[in-house]
Image 1: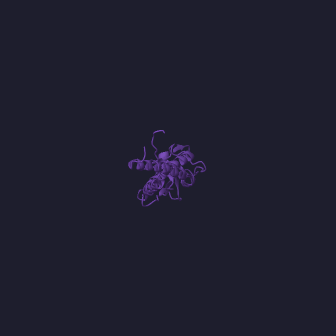
Image 2: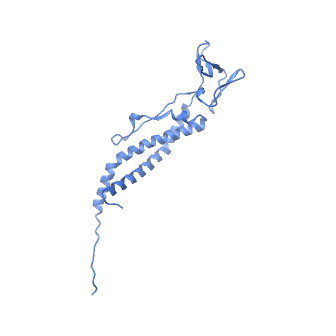
Image 3: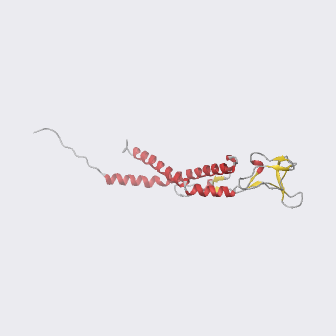
Length: 193
C-alpha cells in the first residue's frame, strides 16, 4: 500500500461570474462616457485634418471650427455627448498665402472647386487691414471681404468620420478601458495576479 493523500479542487464559477457581472455593471457607464468623450476629440482631429488637407488651409484655423460643447460632455449618468461644427466661412485674410495686389486685380487663396471672384480688388482700409474686397452693391462704401466657404467640406468630412472611424475608435477605446478597469477591480478584491 502506498502512502499519500488525496485532494480536490472545486470551482465556484457562479460566484465568480456574479462578481464579474457586478463589476461590469458598476464600471460600464463611466468607462463608456470616457470613450464617448474621446471619440468626439478623435472626430474633431480627423475632421480638421481631412478638411485642412483638402482645402490647403491651416490646421489650426479648421480645428477652431470643430468643437465639443463643454456643457454636454458624456458622464456616467448621461451617456450622450455633443460636438459642434461651425460652418461660417473663413476670410481670405486668414488663409495663406495672404491676398496681394496683382496688376489691376488681386491674387488670393481659393478653394479647389471655387473660382476667384473677378470683381474682387485689393485695398488697405484706414484700420490697416489689407485684403481682398468686393462691392456688395454699386455704392462705394458697401464693401465685403472675400470669404472661403468651407461649410460643405466640413459637412462631408464630419459625415465620413462619424459613420466609420469614430465608431471604430469608440468601440476600441471602450474595450481597452473596460479591460483595464476590470483587471484593476479584480486585483483590488485580491482575486487576480
